[in-house]
Image (tube, rainbow, N blue to C red; front, side, top):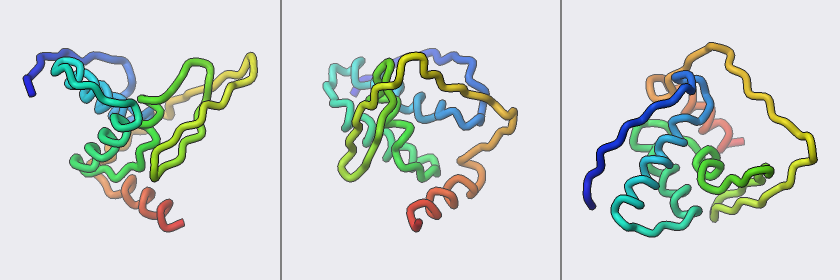
Length: 124
């Protein structure tokens, strides 16, 4: 696999909980695949990216990566796992999502809070 030179820029607030790290992992994987002429399916890409985030210490479940890889304009998704499956749900006309930022930062890799919540959800 050949190397690549990239520049990354954005305006998403750091550690704001907006799935930016997952989107970046997906972007890096997809860029690497394209640069090396590797064909990869969207479902496999989502699963691979979810697994790769565990190497930085976050034990997420794959929802963010699935949304990054499988989303379609004008739809929400009902996502299930094992195996990964996403069903598109058409949104009503005029529907809107509001995304806000509380200005609270949490570095998921620096604390156990995120992984504890993931473990509690799996137990539940």
